[in-house]
Length: 354
Image 1 (cartoon, helix red, strand yellow):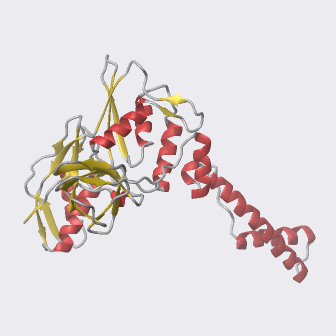
Image 2 (tube, one colour; image 1 turned 180 degrees about the horizontal axis):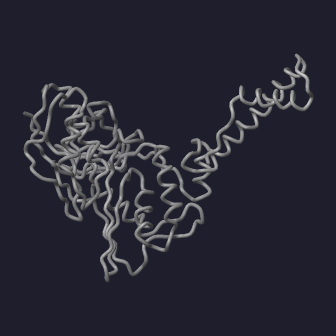
């Protein structure tokens, strides 16, 4: 049974009854003793309740959860800055120093990570990193940025390369950390089984969901992952590279021993293939608010999708119908459930409204 602390009133009543039963008297003095003893007991019960809650990791307060995580060798992922490349146009010989800064339209600033020199006109690729840590620096390809200070022979406008700017992540949320701790406890390290690969992928900054598949009879392991905190949840080439490097070999934060995939294993790390759901939906009333509500409802429904999963038409229709402000609605472009291949992940694409 769960531990339930008695209320102060209950403790006063119990103590008063006990004193009266044992002494056969009831007066102001015994009432004062009863309340004083009950107050002390109430504090002790409160402490016991706190202990009962915090000895279990999934119920523990935030600060105690961090201690549980330290004991199990699960470390909270720290915030990271987004990094990538810009395509910059030059009109002649130019030197772009390390630390040269560009600004996105919303004020986010990127600084070049190394000096680049060119002797001819054309375009150059500049490695940059966001000045502020966090997901705010993640930027899709072709987004325009502007130089903050003029550079000789360098045009002010630059654009994010096709590789995008990615890898920026906030400090890990407590609930995400709690989930990883429970995964670590329930699936302890086993020298490279399926759960080990999932755990290693989830230890990388920004990675929110991961899946592992192994080919029967072959030493091939495939790890797929997504980054829900980025504008595009599907990983870029740089995201894939850093996750693959980490899974291949990294130091365990608890033991300082190197761990990772077995030498004989062929490791394939990638993002799942996008299977975009582009439904035609009829709703009433059709307003910007109801459209936003339906979009959010379908997005929430698909957020737990897995590669090779299934999107049930009945559940999608239910999500549409119960969305805030919708009196009637359904998906009219689908007649059956949606099935994904093993390497495909179902996501919401573009909605056509009727």
